[in-house]
Length: 141
Ligand SMILES: [Zn+2]
Image 1 (cartoon, rainbow, N blue to C red):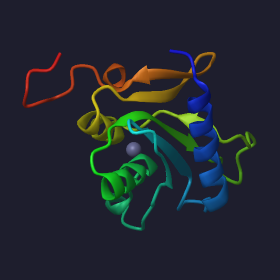
Image 2 (image 1 turned 90 degrees about the vertical axis):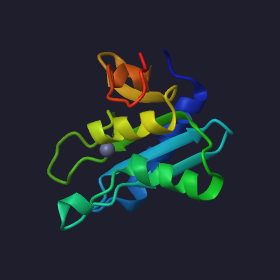
Image 3 (image 1 turned 180 degrees about the vertical axis):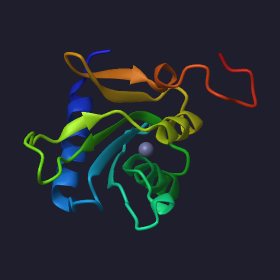
Image 4 (image 1 turned 120 degrees about the vertical axis):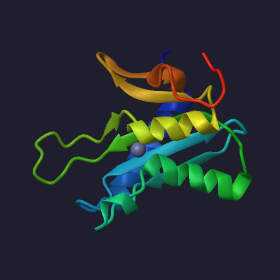
């Protein structure tokens, strides 16, 4: 799927959020989420001394949605990574969601679009494409 203007807004807002809140080793990823009701949420990750306490930016954004709106669905979600100070590539770039976030996104909207890096730039895919043959208590193909 090609990107829409709304997709580009999400990338810009996620990038602006992490540019504003970047702290090396603490906040390095931003996310933006468009609900099925047309609201946008942005967030950054929460890293932690205790690694298991760290929370991804996508989960923080989804938590805001659930807190404010309830289950409003995920139309589209994107995560972006800020480079570390020593990296020569200074661009904030779209990154794929981690495995745990793929599970989380699927749990909240099986039709969610996810913006991911492709060989020729950012593309939109469905969460099911990122999580084939997912474990489920139901039979879902
Ligand atoms: Zn994640």
